[in-house]
Length: 251
Image 1 (tube, one colour):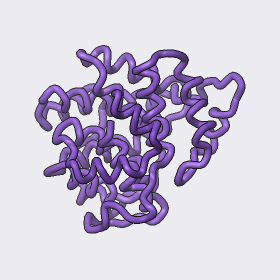
Image 2 (cartoon, rainbow, N blue to C red):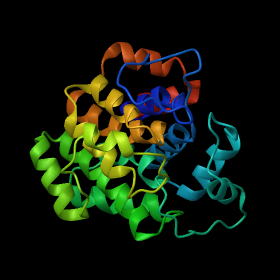
Image 3 (cartoon, rainbow, N blue to C red):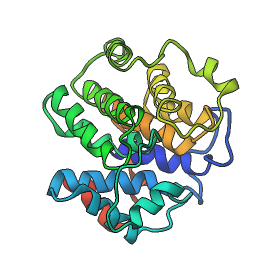
């Protein structure tokens, strides 16, 4: 899941200042983790230690109330509610927090089942569930050695996402889209178009839009397929709180 966190941190400075090129500094003094990383670690904590996922997410939300970029308005309210309920969201938050699921299980069926569990606590709209499942499935398939063609075929046939595009075709007309249906396919295309981990992140960020979340989703898949360069991992971990680093290490 470090790849997802790397994408989040690298994309963080471009979320509200989009850059439509792959030529940019990977890390700046302002590069920092956002809500994507916080909830990714919360899901990993739950997978390791069990318990009530909602309460764990709320605890992380209380302990890290002001991440770079901030939580989405409705999700921020959900984090503070005494009895939080799903709110039929199709937002890309379900996909950005799911990467740990793709690494955890020995079957695709279980991966899809648990990805759904992580989504429905808040994002119980069919598109919110689909986004989480597609992301986790792509990570799982990459992790077990499937080819890009196999991953593409499975995601298209199972989730009906249009992956028959390139980043160069998407980039000129793409703008901020917080939905799963408007972010997950594009993030997967960035992975499919890429030549290595760093290139995958650069392609995702270059699309514009919700840059940190696109790169978070892409980074999770790219890590499973390529691995993550040590120099990027070092830069990522030095920007994280100690308890995040410990959770990642245990995971």
